[in-house]
Length: 484
Image 1: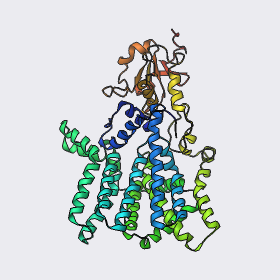
Image 2 (image 1 turned 90 degrees about the horizontal axis):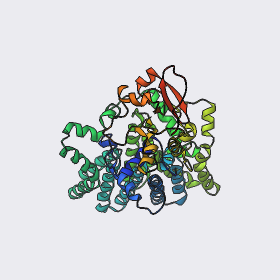
Image 3 (image 1 turned 45 degrees about the vertical axis):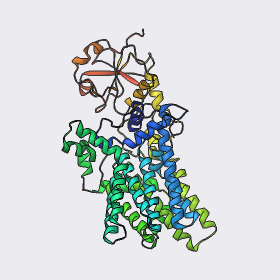
């Protein structure tokens, strides 16, 4: 697990926790109020700094996911080795492991997903309606964490309708299940109601709650071209680079005869729905939306291991366990192989103190302090003089904001984007910065398109100062203001 401040969305999560912000500024679908409520609660732990405790949420709920996956496979297969194989396959799956090591919302979602399946197993095995009610309560909590839970709700809704039509569940049970779901989703529903009470339009609020305005076309995308299919296969291969992954096919074919039948059918439906969603979701971080599918595939590996071992004994058990752990070994040379082959991994630029190949291809983040080192170096007067203005971007500003909120940042330096949500992302016009430009006090982190105002790129030169660049008039001799 990463020990401190981070970049990008993980850094934003750390900043929002410090601000105790359950809503965020990017629309309701990206609010994730349950995650932030949990992370804010973790701040009460009597050790370490805030960023560490926020990262710890992912690690704890990732561990809970793996433990529950083992428990589910143990009670379904009634054997220990298949449960171990399935749980280990999940624990070392690349994307899942990576999101256990960073401040991210997804392991809370996976812990809830596997808990839902445990509830369903108990309901299917014993027929006690309390388990069905609890399932919908847990799924409601999933909605309060991430809208990915709505895909599972679709499957559970079809299941509930089938149970009602076949008289396997009473109408009263389903009504109570619906009420339990509302209770679980209460945090998210509360944010929606708050938007409406605050004067937001119904249509605008619904769009914000479903997908946020800037993701609408991605959420509603139905086209699956060759590029998305190839990417999807690569993402899945990255998570299961081991022959043991073939047992998922054995588990899939074994589902029709796996008991309890209701659990097996819903498990198959969940896999289809989550896979289809991820495959056609054309966004930069598409790979993250395969995480529920990775969990479900690991469960199928466990089911497949049980069938494989039915007529095999002895060394086969040990071989399967070793095979399940092979990905952890395969990931070690991955950054070096990718760099030697000049493989593109979707990163448009390098960031100080971050080797992109290692950062994104090694799922573990033990000891990584690059983001914190970057922010601390910017605080040095040899890098940024008194009263400097620093123009950063959404990736690099997060550790800076983290240091600002923990009183570890110089108060004389102005930073864009600002912690004040009322401030624009960066100065819009040259006139706004004329005094600082004339004094040589404007600095940027990345003099590149999308990370810096275009008018600066068009009319000025950039002189590197450690991890930042000083802006100077085009053609002027290189120099820097004297330190006070």
